[in-house]
Length: 337
Length: 265
Image 1 (cartoon, rainbow over the protein chains, first blue to last red):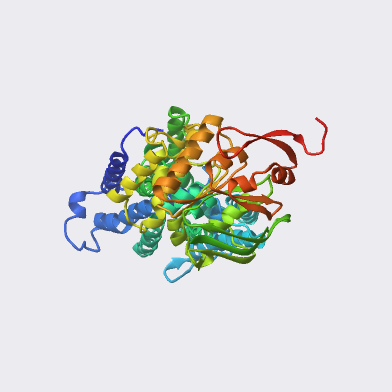
Image 2: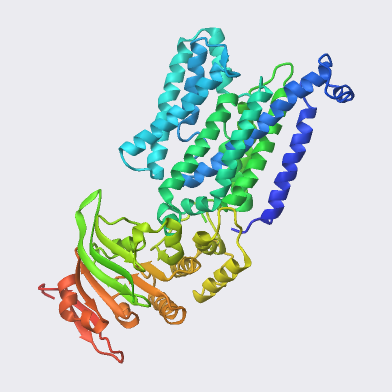
């Protein structure tokens, strides 16, 4: 497969796209801001309303979109490689189901306050996600096989199980609760504070560095465990390490932003088409592209449907799927050759 | 000096109780050119994987260069022993060059990019294996013989001391089988590699390899020079097929099957 552009050109384009989105996305929003007013003085006055909206509401939200998009796309690359499956995504091991279950349980129990600056919904969602990954591993270790197919099947099974519990809660809930549940389940980046953005940024920097360091191992694992071992990759250890790291990051993102659909599936494939399958290039490109994509989707979601805003998870699919299908259609031999 | 020393080796797959290797004792000399022969299920591929460190023995010892193989880290091992699998399916397509560069994995640090030295090693490996012309192509689009040579080049890029090949000629036509054995012979002669090949090809093994190990049902049946191991009696005992030796110009006769041993023709 000959790439359309050199890899470095695609990466440079992705980086420019990322920086452009980071600079431009905060300029739009449902509230019309006067930027003369926003940057009038530093630090901004507490009664400068435009500055408050810009620095306390809009910027953290754009940053969160960037972090979440980068995390989802990078984790998607990792899950596809380790599970050797083009359909794998950050939710394959049941993270979406588990976190949804946690969040919905917290909402159903009416837990509103929080713990250490995080709402109970976030804490429960995170615990639920970790629970589902732990269950997948427990199942896999009982049958003593960490092979891709075992993990995949266990993950899909556990996801269905938790989704059923979510539906049960949803069915039993009253209208206010069920609205809150549905809102969370569709994925949304609103109501974030700088503190959770900062925490996520630290965790994400660590995990992405680790995954990038495993890039060559991922290339080999995608070619099968035996070849990986023959080339010096301690396969079971690297599989467990990379899946756990990616699951941890996914869980943290989902706990704050909800299970945002499709970014983790679509962005990696778009970059596989553009730069080929060297996972170091792929991780860098997907992280940049995923961040830009989610920043743009979120900007559209919060500014173009005023006075209301739509959940970003709805837009990622509506905008992302046609792009993927178009690229697949143009290069129809993509997964075959 | 012996590179591999195998003593009283036993092995069994956890989910395949009927097959086992038992009481294998043999050595592979440094600079040896060895073939593991035997029918399906004799254990030659399993023995090869044990030598490559891809499987762990149940009992007995494998010493590599005087040190237990289990003491090597995956990286150290891969820097000295290269294993060439029968076939590989790349779920996500890669180019030939990318696959050969994978061979440098054991020699590179986590964040270390491929250096000029690594590139020249890869280039040499591709040229030695007659794969230089198609280095830019996608692996999945190659023919069986080309794929096999790329996997061999990727193993060579590891700059190993020992090269272990699992049925390298299994799905190749005659011309490609011979080409592959000639490359193997060249690597042994010119690069000084210790080469072990698990193969079904009695006649090619007899022609190209220096020492043969004949296996049956997890046991060693015979080992030694080709002319000692390749006899009508031993082949018939191991394969259950009557064969007739045909003498040509080479020292080792060709064996032509005559039909099932004891059966009527």
